[in-house]
Image (cartoon, rainbow, N blue to C red; front, side):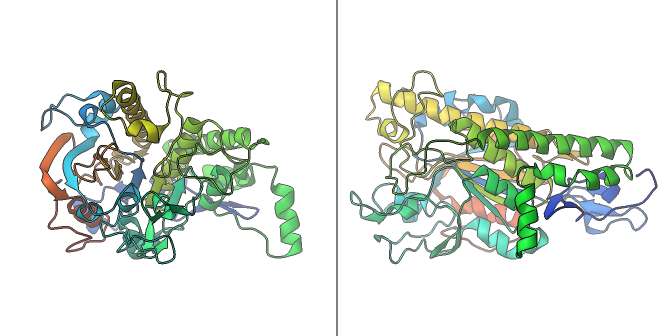
Length: 463
């Protein structure tokens, strides 16, 4: 199993100068078993076993979809992929695509906010200018974090792109804060998202900032060095104890960390643009210093950080928001033929010049999902992949953005939850099926079973 036939603990870190860097699953940690394996429940005493955990990512994009180019025309396994879903062709067998899912408690609220804030709670959103916010309940990611978060260094990881926007949307009478959060620790407490890639990276790898002047001076002197450099000596010592296959896995992992660090360094160069302290909803806000000015590169950097978090078991629960809702981000530099802002073309009025751009933006979001799934599938964990051992919820809080309709939600679930999901299907649910009926089995597969959640009326059959 290793060169000197010894095991190392699963919770092993590379350490150096105030940095703790987690490791991927290695053979030296014991035989890797999927969560669905009978052996995982009763591991062999002679050959210690490491159970591959299930991870859950909840990924949100704003402003709904052009339904005609999103939902497949045929139910079952051999459905033709519509235009917006075509980038996911290579992951067809890893997907569950849904239609008919609904959030009944969002039908009474005008605009976007009553739909976005309860994306992961399913409960009513209180109409308020901001003093007494409430989304009715805890979100599924934070319910999991409360139950299993103690098993990992980070209970959960919340990432985003846009800064939080405050103030009131006078058109509908809701605080704009509701469009900035999907993760809620309690009905009244959103979980802060990290939007700066460098800070997210440092949080992920446990950078310990000095509490006294000497430690602070040492930290300051190390700021110019990549975090990976600080743990290389420890990595070399560990590598000498590993077998050939594990050495390859360790080298591959360190290369992936180095790639992220190089990109962080490139995007940490001074940027003359500043965060707008009073950004208005619908604006294409500027990137801060330390974050990519290229929206796609910013998105992919954050997704790569989430992959590293899952790969090292630094956390098993993550959320990511492509943008705040009511986002007016301009995609003209990224997508040929798109000339209007995202929110503007979502109000397509059935005009081709708008819904064609709208559909292309939907497709672009699926291209980023495919990128994320590619990265997860490339990482081996025993006989399976990290994607096999994950659940990736991907969707928006409304169907057609022109109508602000919270029924027939565009929802995809990718990954197999350790072999527990029967993927490769398009499931056309009966109309008004609660989205929370999907959350019930997802919670069970994360080891946090519940009888009901949000407005659920049962458990959706996805096994």
